[in-house]
Every structure is written in C-alpha cells, then in structure tokens.
Length: 509
Image 1 (tube, rainbow, N blue to C red):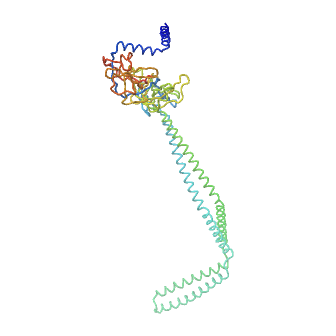
Image 2: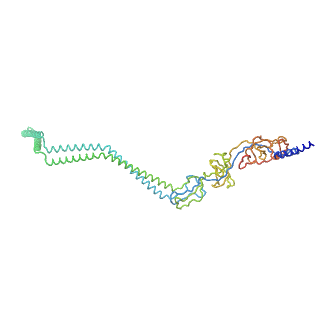
C-alpha cells in the first residue's frame, strides 16, 4: 500500500516536473521518439564549396548636377549668332554665341589712338628732360665764360676810347717827328741821286732805265715824307669827333653785353627748375599713357564680352536665345548642365557609416533607366548626419559612360565594403539555430553530424561560414528532424541558385 502511494506520488511529481520543461526539450524529446520509431531519415544534401564573397551595403538617393548654370550677357547688345542648340554637348571654353561688336571695335580703335598720342607726348617730354639735363650741366659754365668775355670787351672798348680822347703820347709824337725827319732826309738824298742820274744819262754814261728806277725811288721818298707829315699832324691835332663818338658807342655796346651776360648768369638756378618741370611733364605723359593702355584693356574686355563661352563642359539644356534678340545683362542666353559635374548623392544609415570611406567603388542602379547600372566611386562622406532619420550623405562620382543620366533621377547604390576570397559557403537554408548558436548537419557515412558554424556574408542563396571544410555534404532538406548521430539516407542533391544578386547582403544574425 505504501509502495503504491510512493509510485503515485512519483508520477505526480514527474508530471509536475515535466510541466516546467521548456519547449525545446519537448521538441528534442519528440525528435528522439521519432528517431526511435523511425531511425533512418531521408535528407537532401549540397556540398560546401569555396567562392569569393563580398559584403555590401545599399545607399539610396538622387542623381545631382553640381554645375547647372544659365549664362547671360554682360552687356546690353544684339545677339548676332548662336552656335548651339538644345541637347548639344559642349566643352569648356567653347564659343556658344556672339553679340554685335561694332561699338566695341570703335572703342578699341579710339583707345589705340590715345595710346599712340600719349606715347608721342612721352617721347617729347623725355627729350625735354635730356635737354634740361644738358643745360644744367653746361649752362653755368657757359654763362660764366660769357660774363668774362663781356668784361674783356668792355675793358678793350674803354681803352680804345681813352686812347682816342687823350690823343698820342709824347713818345708817340717824338717817334712821329723822327719818322718825318728821316723821310725828309731820304727825300733829299733821292733828289740829289735823281739829278746825278739825269746828268749821266745825258752824257750817255747810263741807260734811261736807270733813270726810271731812280725817279721811282724819288717818288716813293716823297710819299713817305707826306705820310710821316700826316702822322705828325694827327698827333698834334688829336682824334676826330666822329671817331670819339664811334668809340663811345662801341664801349656802350660792350657794357650792355656785359649786363646781359650777368643777367643770364643769374638765371642759372632756374635750370634745376626747368629739369624738375621736364620730369613732371614726363610723369604726366606716363600717366596719360597708362590711362590710354587701361582704356585699351577696357575696350578689349568689351570686345571679349561680345562672345559667350561655355564656363564648363556639359550639355545644353533648353532652347538658347535666338539670333537678332537684344539681350540685357539679365537675359539668359544658354543654360548648361555640367557633364563632369553630375554625381550620385546618396544617404546611408548611421549604423553603416563607419563601414564606408572615400575611394570605395559603387555600383549605381537608376530606376528611371530600367535599372541600368553605372560605375562610381565615393569621393566624399558628410561627417554630419540628419538629425531626424540619422542619415549621412555620401557623394559618389560617376566614372565611365554617363549616357542617359539626368539630374533628379532616383538611384540606388551598392557599396562593396569588404571581400573574402576562397570563402567556404553553404546554402543559407542549411543553417540552423539554437539560442545564440548556429550549426549545420553534415552527412558522414550514414549518419548526420551536427557541426557548429559562424555565418558571415550572404551572397544570394549562399552564406559564407567558418568552422566547415570545402566539400562537406551539408543537409539542405530534412534537417528539422535530425539530431547529432541520426541515421540518414541521402535522397538527392539540391539545386541552389548561384546567380549573383544585384547587391550582397550582410550575414544573418
């Protein structure tokens, strides 16, 4: 009786304990029961293999153009010609349109003429400086010499006047009388000699030629006496009044010349002022020349402004202005959307921001182009996130062809952040979980072996794992009823899709 009560109490206790067992234990118990009842399980397997897998994350955003400019005219003018149309591809510096340059050309010619005039004035001013320098170097000496010469002339004229006014000196008078006495004595001698010669000629002692010679000597002696007598008379009577007046006039002229020379000498300090004035004229001419050159630059710029060039490479967007239209400073002429300036501006959650960096390659898929993909590279990551969605902006620069891309298109980018070559991969459906553990069943002979693995990157229908070797036969169907050591029978090998998806996914938790 007591033993029956103990068995009953034990049964009740067992039931109480079984109510506290977790469901996993019940599941394992059920599986064990099934194994006992049906020990051989049919399974499908797939061999583990090696492959290169890439972990990638997705970013979404829009195609954006950094260069989108409407080009206008810098002046109010008539459009003469337009060389592009809507949709044309243009390069930086390409001529897009021209405006009327008649006024600009006239302005340029006028400025060139002003430069020529200013240059001539500059040359004249420099010549004046050279002359002023020469005058400053030579003028004082020359004026000093002129003063000395004028003084000498005054002194000479004064001595001449004094001589005329005062008459001959006693010595000069005595010399004049002596010259007269000598001339008279010579005349008397020549007279006697003439008489003797006549007698000899009459007697036939000498020829008539000798008489002629002697008569000439006598006439010369007469002239000498007359000249000497006049000199004596001049010394006695003094100078004539007209000679005195002439000498006085000559002296006055010499004095006036001296006064002029002295006045000219007083002007020597002004030579420095003349040099300063000439230098000032040079500076004024130089300023005029620089101003004229500046006018040429302004005229050249005005002429250059009649031409409209592309500021960057891109494509013409919209219809340009028509030839013949008068364009103002605010009139749009051509709109250009940059080609090199088109980029993908995407956003990435804060949980993945530490995985991206500048230089990573991106595959961009544009929905508006039927999912067409473009290559790109991350060129910038905004360090400041959106305070609402905790999203960070990533700029992707396109590389290669950008045909069809237009600003405003929605796009998705796949960023490869790391690649594992020769990774062991298994079908994702083969991976089982229990708590925090992950494992697969591998067929070893006719038994199932439970192998713990660490999942990594998922690539399509396959997942990279560690803890497993290549070639292991992994159970892909029927593994729900297996436990470690279960007897199995391989029914078939699964066919798992091996095509690469548009973007790899992170491994399952």
